Structure formats: structure tokens, C-alpha cells
Amino acid sequence: MFESAELGHRTDREEYEAAVPALRAELLDAQFDLLELKQFAVVVLINGVDGAGKGETVNLLNEWMDPRHIQTWAFDVPSAEEAEHPFMWRFWRALPPRGKIGVLFNNWYTQPIRDRVDRRCKRAELDQRLDEIRRFEAMLAHEGVLLMKFWFHLSKPVQKRRLKELEGDERTRWRVTARDWRFYKLYGRYREVAGHVLRTTSSAEAPWLIVDGSDARYRALFVGRTLLAALRRRLDAASQHWMPRQSAAPLPPRVDRLDLLNSLVRRSMGRSEYDALLEPLQGRLALLTRAPAFRKHALVLVFEGMDAAGKGGAIRRVAAGLDARRYRIVPIAAPTEEERAQPYLWRFWRHLPARGKIVMFDRSWYGRVLVERVEGLCSEADWMRAYAEINDFEDQLVAAGAVVVKFWLAIGKDEQLARFRAREAEPHKRFKLSAEDWRNREKWDDYARAVCDMVDRTSTENAPWTLVEADDKHYARIKILRTVCERLEAALA
Image (cartoon, rainbow, N blue to C red; front, side, top):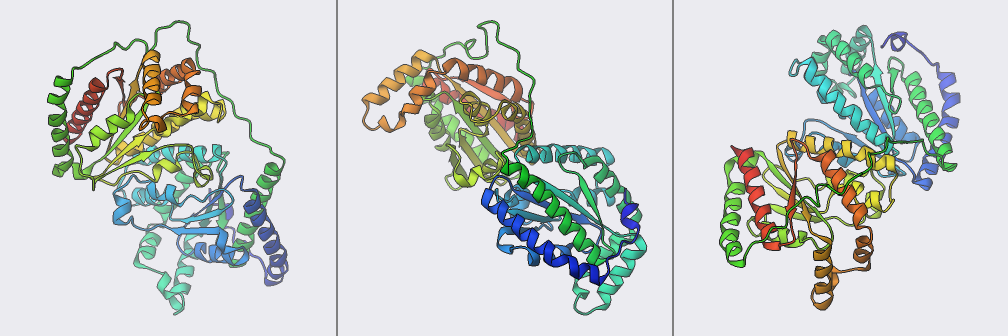
């Protein structure tokens, strides 16, 4: 894996000084073309052995290009806030928008490699993490991100010499730590684990590029030219409006009228029964979220349903049982310009709760397989791959301690019409009804089909869907509160 990078490549001063001016100019041109087009983002991962010139190379790229449009991130031990969220949370927040370049040191590969080198995880656990990383990077590629992964390499003798040189210079002594020497002593194991990681995660969408770090001039030109070539290739394709072909196998057609939604039986609840149950359930929920055991968890509530299904009313009844300092309600509408410049799931990762906190999503990441599918706002390939990406996302939340509870509030077509008419008649409710609501109603059957596919493909053991018979608002609110309490009790037991 590393043989070519241990040959000791060299670039003499004359060749380097002759090449740099043209390379700098071309990199700047490509960077401003990227900024002008704003059709994709560039993510550069910097990994490798200590002393191989990672920091010097990135500093040089910032000098050669416009640093205002390069976002450089260096990740170390997770902060208290980062430790309260899923592992990938801090990396999602660092993704650059379209038109920008993001450089990530100590990224999502660093901790898995170190854990395996230190024997804090088994080979099977490492492979499971690498499988998650492969799927994440494939998602980035499908979202249009240009992902470049550089591994800076040194042979063991060259690494030792490099560390001694840095330690012997008072200007660079601070850069060599006890950890660097510790990993040097584990060089053989580190090389073995890194080789396995690189081989396993080098894909067509995101291949690894191994840099011989033994000569500063050689590595600088290698990285600069490689980045330029990749940028130019993608920019040329973008300027011609070329997109990689994506296809998806079709879902089976519905051949009968029996599906999850029309199989639901209408439920009802009288006002007196509702009043008798509401406050005790809210109190039960309040005690659960104040329990010491809840500090190790987070609560993520997802509310989906047809227009006028009662999502807002249900959310208010849940919120009434919670401490206002510990929850947030996130209404999801059409993405903003900032959100459109990022991969689809980015705007949801940014709202995830820390441990001990609660977030309620009024509509959610399921918009991709519902409204975007039905309205043709994304390709079939995009919404088909979204099922797996959503399942991965929710699995990561649960693995980090979150309790994910998802509700589909189901109402009949006649009930929806009655609620629309009632909203029209009430001046203080008229704002809830729009022309888009009426237009969506015309596609009722298409939405119903999308909902059934969604539930079939994303109701998992970690995050199952709860279908709520919502023609009667009293019944729906009680069922939702009871379900949240039961799911929390199971998690805290």
C-alpha cells in the first residue's frame, strides 16, 4: 500500500521554483471559478503519520490560494459539547457550502485508527465503523461534494529523523509531543492498521492519495497539482452541466387498495376521558425527562402527517409536559439558500440535541421521500438512496444514546376537507391554510403511496414508526403522549 511513497521522491530547488508561480496562478483561477459556479463543495481530508508535513502543506495551500474561501478545521479530543452529540456531529458542522473548500485535519478516520492501534476496539468494530464511513462518503459524492483524501506517509527511519529535526529546532520543538513518539514506537502496528483502513475505504467516489512526505518541495507540488487536476476536471464537467448518471431499481407497483393507511380504523375519545388522561401523561413525561438516567440520553421526536393532521396541536401538548429550558421545536419548511448549499441532511444534523435535551421536529428529513419525491423536486435516484441514508442517520442517533420516536398522523381525505373548511371560516386560523395545501390535496394518492413506502423502508428496530389515527384529535394526542412515555421508560430501564 505504501511502497511507492517510501521511494524517497525528491524535487530540486530549481524545478520547484520554476513550477510554483504557474501552479499558484492556476489554483487561484480554479478556486475563483469554483466560487463563481457554486455547484459543488470541496472537502480535503488530511491524514497520515506524524512529521510527514501535513500542517506545512496546508499552510502552503492557504498561502497559494485565497484563504478567505478555505475553511480549515483541526479536530482534537472532543469538547464537552461535542461529546454530548453523535460522533459525526462535529464533522457535519464543518462541511463547507458549495463554492468553498474545507480542509479537515484529524477527521473521521483519526479516532477509529487510534482506537485500533491502542487495542481499544476489535477488528470487527473497526470494520463496522469503516462501513459507516464508506456509506457517508458515498452520500457526500452523490450530493456533489468533491472529496479528496490525502495520506501523508514516511518510512520509520525517515519519521524518526524528521521528529528529531523538528525537536532540535527551537522554532518547531513545540510541534513534537510525547504522543508523537509513542506512535513512532507503535509504527509497525500503526502502518498495518492504516493500510487496512486505506484499502477498505478507497473507493471510486473517494480514492486515497498517498503522499511521500520525505521532501517538502515534492509533497507541496504533488498535493497542489493533484488538487488542481481534480478541481479542473470537476469544473469542466460542471460548466457543461454534466451530471453523473444515477439510476434506481423501480419499486413494485401497488396492485390492490390495501395499504398501511387505509387499513387504520377510525378511533375516537370523549372530552371527559381526554381531560382525565392528559395531565397524568404530561406529568409522567415530565418525571421521565427529569430522571437522572435521562442525562445519558436525548429525545428526538418526529412529527409527520398530511396537512391539517394535527401535528402542531400534538406538539403543544407534549411541550406542556416539558421544561421549556430543555426542549426546542424545529419547524421544517423549504430549505434556505444556506441549507441548499449543503448536503441534504446537514440542516437536520445542526439541530440535534445534546444529552439530557429534547428536540421536536415539525416535519423532518422525511421530506425527501415525501414532498420532494411527489413534487419531483429531486431525482428518483436521490429519493431512493435517501431511505438508506436516513436509516444510517437514525442508527447513529440511537448509538449515541438518543431515543428516536417517529409519528405519522393519519387522517382521512374527508376529515382533511372538513378541517380546511373550518380553517377558512376562522379568522385566527386562516393563516394555517395556503394554496399549496389545496394543491397537495390533489395529489392525495401519490402522497399516500409515498407514505406507505416510507414506513416500509424506514421503520426499523432502532426507530420504528408509530401510525396515529388522527381523525379524532383527542385520541391522537393521548396516543402520542403515551407512546413517548413508553419509549422513554423502555430506554431508561
